[in-house]
Length: 163
Image 1: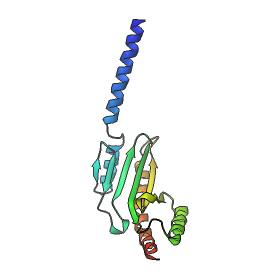
Image 2 (image 1 turned 135 degrees about the vertical axis):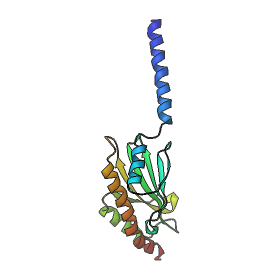
Image 3 (image 1 turned 60 degrees about the vertical axis):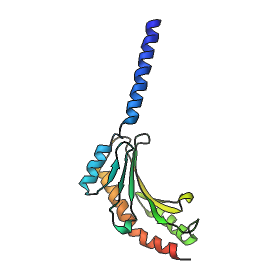
Image 4 (image 1 turned 180 degrees about the vertical axis):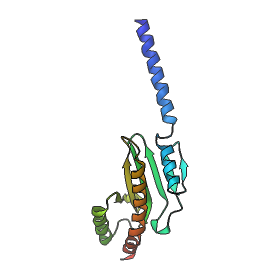
């Protein structure tokens, strides 16, 4: 009985030790993400331990910076322009709200979000990594998100100026 208890205790200690090591590691696809950003010639400031990268030098119309967040727990890569469309009021106007809904119905990989506490509309996309990190899909979603930002931001910014 003492041998079994000793073995169980050793396994528990090993598992706890492994869990703490795993928590200190960068997300599993961080190196792949960095390789793909380099392949796209996109300069980013990255923090591998947290799995985040920020792209600052994007076209002005894209309303950068763009944050990319790797999350092993959710098996996702979240790409977001947090301050995509700053709002001067607490709520979007009815015209802007309607246009956001119309665009969300048409956008394929991107989505527009409005968290009221931020007083800004976000533009984001998610890539799922539950089975693998699809490099081609990442490049496609990222470049599509940047192109979408450049295309729709001028129109949406104009709607924020309309009373």
